[in-house]
Amino acid sequence: MEPPYKKMTGRETPDLETEVTSIEVISQRINVDANITDATRKGHICRCLGPCGKQLLKRRPSKGLCPHCGSYCASATFASKAQAEELAHKSWTVMNSNLHADAVRELGLMPMNLGHALESDLRKMARGRNDERQRRHLYAHRHIIGRPGLANGDLKTRASLRKALGRGATVPRFRRTPERTSPGVMGKLIEAELEFRAGRRQMRGLSMRPRTLRYVHPVLGPSRGPITVEIDGEYHNLPVELKTVSTFEALENNPLSLRGMVRQLSGQAIAGNVDQGILIIAERDGNRLTAMRIGGLRAYHLRNVTRWMAELDIAHQMTEMTRKGVINDVEL
Ligand SMILES: [Zn+2]
Image (cartoon, rainbow, N blue to C red; front, side, top):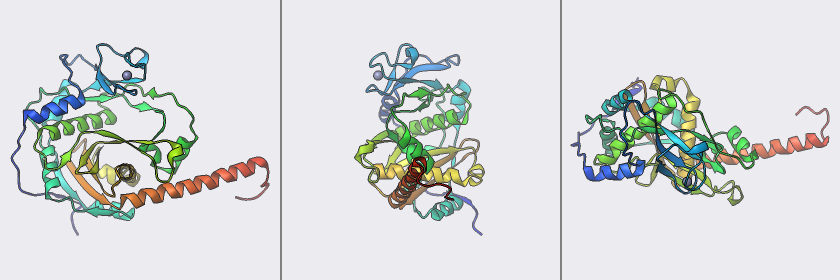
């Protein structure tokens, strides 16, 4: 029997870190001039939901509102000095995963070859760095819930879709600032670290620069408004989603979690008008990283949403009929 995880081997390529590309990354994640000391629990890097986007503010936004446009504005949590050092030094071993590929096949999707260029990019990104004092990029924004309009996360399950279609105008809210060591924040910090490395190393096609896409859904139509989709990066024109898990074994014990990741990727593929996507999974409590190139995402996504809409429509009609008293004492 084949081992579930096998190290991806390949030619090592020189690690060229250039200052030129690092400027790009910093402008993307916003330069924080202030000296970040260990005592600085939160910076004033904020993410405005209005036109300002990510920005650096002199003081915390009052009542969570952007001082420039009045929209909601989420503040960020910085990595501690110890966390920043650990993240800078952290190296992952890039693995092939037969188990994940089997799980993807079971969903009716096609695991595909990554190709040498992508494997080499992954190994480059997985390698730690020695300049641990570079840590201005290591922050995580507070999570915003109830953003207006439909987002990719609303298309992950039938239940989430039903909830999203039923909600009226919403007021965005912020989750309470989570602990710096919580899995959610750690995941975001790992994302930030990998983005930073990918941005200043000579990559052959992989970019970990996050982007927001908006598109009209082919099944839901224009009346539902554009769907907002965030992607973590791109490989040529394919969406890249980076997920962190505690360990691969923990993920194996939770098949729904992998399915959720694949569904998220399928929504990103639709938004980008492509059929494939790249899912990268990195361990938070271990040192393994794997990636899958998955094909057949378009049909998979459309099949799911079409089925859920049909089921929700039927459920809706049933409720209506019951309410009107047309159906009495009938076992449904
Ligand atoms: Zn603003």
